[in-house]
Length: 393
Image 1 (cartoon, rainbow, N blue to C red):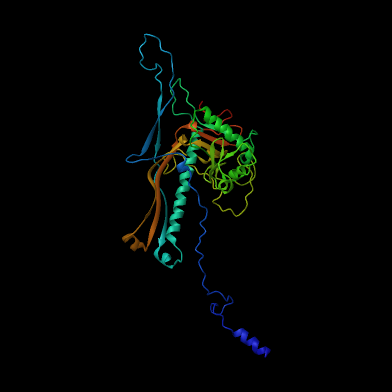
Image 2: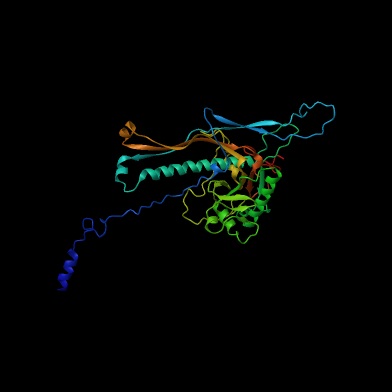
């Protein structure tokens, strides 16, 4: 009887086995959960934090600046014909549209038929994320450039305020100061004072830090009396401008230049590295290096700086007039159809936009830096021991 039971067990048919193979569940249906890993989704925040204009029937948009004028006492009998110094001085700033920025994917009809989940929507989202990421990166680089620039008004005898650069901490060469919440708070108050001194409006002041800086900072909320906040609880965890320091709303973004990388930088501590160990398996896209994007690069008609310009940058504080973005083609998605789809048996999904960004009013821009005793140089210039570029009075 024992032998019969053994034979019966060996010959038993398993309905889920593929050709009698060892895996008895191979043919059972793999149910789709209805969820997808959407990867690293970048939140586009910069578009609403700066001046945005739409451009039609042109390649660039002109912005006019007027400087300050003077007041004087009238001498009886003298004709009033305007100030003799020609005030106020006038200057211009032009933002040019860069070449068409695109992101695309080809979707094969048969793949779409066989897939048990919706492909087009997910592909469209990923294309949108790619465009949003580039959009934010260019705007934040433009703000950084403005923080190092002089005012466009440069008439002899007139001094207009330029950008501001503030070192986080006082030790000079400690890049790790960029993560010190107490030193960040001090830098924010210094920035607020500088903006006040330059007559910059309180309206629309924001700060953008990388996620690790932001989370180091919000841990002080409730304990550090210097930080004012409008809300407690979950809201402060989202990085959406709830927490404020000196009236400056704080956002987090992986798209700000941070010690030559976007958003974060791992590795051994140095003058250009804050010394944070990688938590491992973060993916190659985390800590992506800043690319060269001066106007001599293909497709770029504005100056967004070279990679080396951001070796010590670690945060931005600005008011919305600090930079402008000009759009000729707003973010949109196009899909092929008709004969093209028949010939290729599928569709190309294309996301596109045409935009350009640059600084407008340097007085409204503040760059935070660490790891060096000397403020980073203006774009296109060589750093020297005496260079304190960007203050412009």
